[in-house]
Length: 437
Image (cartoon, rainbow, N blue to C red):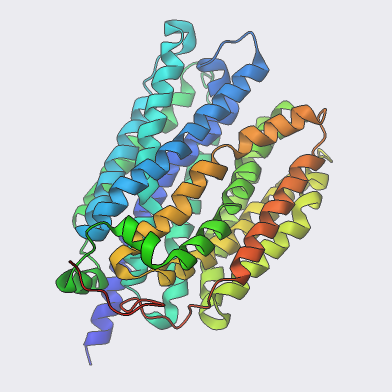
């Protein structure tokens, strides 16, 4: 009679620790994007070419996504062999320390080209840690949750991502009101990242490993998990890869490019874009778990398909609303795109991806699907959108077409995905139990 309550309590504790860690770590990652759009242009790049500075700052932002699959490759390998919890401690240290160090960097005016070089280096370290953070958190939570509510539980680390983004935006917005923001105030949010890392480290060091992984470790773990998932579950891996590849660009174009666009091209105060991101992420904190809960009732595929269809339909209205230059409509546009459309997909993705892969290589499979696509498509997305805007003479229709195409690709990929709502995480989806060699 007491077994179930004990298991639920354990799941709740693991979920709390994983979500808090995701909040802290994606505070770090989002903060860099905000600063790249609004402040890095003037502090780390030559001041005589604003366009080149903007492209340079966004390119530095993209570098973090190149480092993510490398970090994911290394850390997921050990996550599938020695445990999920240990890797989450490492990601916390990498991201927290690199974020704090960014707040201490000298500017281009002080040290010349050394400033952007150091910024790129720290962004690489930050990206390396981010490559395994969210996946490790969602795998740990999903493997520790009750099957009938796995969609809800697994979606909570995704809500933590949005909560971290919300916290970063609030802190950055508050810092932007400081009298010395342009000279020193922009550093404050980065230095606060070290405090968050300390809190997260304290919580994660006391976290237990998931029971599902412990059972698998007793039976045997894969020698090379990433090679094993490519060899034994290529279909599921290809579906997950194709479905996620277009989602990142949609998210980061709305979150990063639009912030830069409304400020530098439409001439609106930076506060409008920041408030839009605050409202959107606040809505997403709620929308992602709601989407996860809905997947427990109707299935993983219908929820993802609904989110992708909405983004395809909303691509042009998104920019129509933004181009009115009416602040409330700009906020509405960003909220519907990021806070509803993308959040709906993310809420469905967590449980679907967890259930697509066997425990022996689950961490590695999801890392390939999420982080390798992030390097290919997510990081460069704001840069590509900026280049399209310049090529079209300031018109946004090519960017709207890009968003529509991304949503359509994700929609089609999920049509080929199996429905996994009733899948056991201990047994593989499509293959018999494997014996470790």
